Image 1: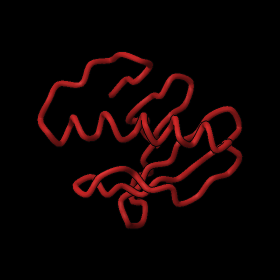
Image 2: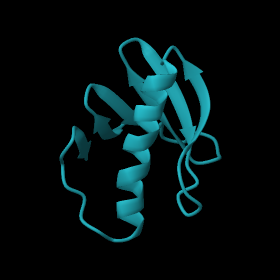
Image 3: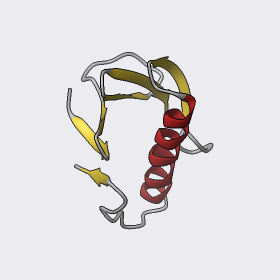
Length: 86
């Protein structure tokens, strides 16, 4: 499972040959959440949450949405605020 983004101590991973719809798994501190990606229409959509608090989910959603919008607008993505693209 390749890590595609790090949100501070959390890993954002994509499983090879995983089923649709397009989604990512966020893993860290013994918790996991799954977010559907609807990149053209706007923010990510929480599909499953196993242990993250509501506050953590909001932070993760923000961390996933901001860089993906920059990718789709062809802008450079700086590795700041704990967000690192691989």
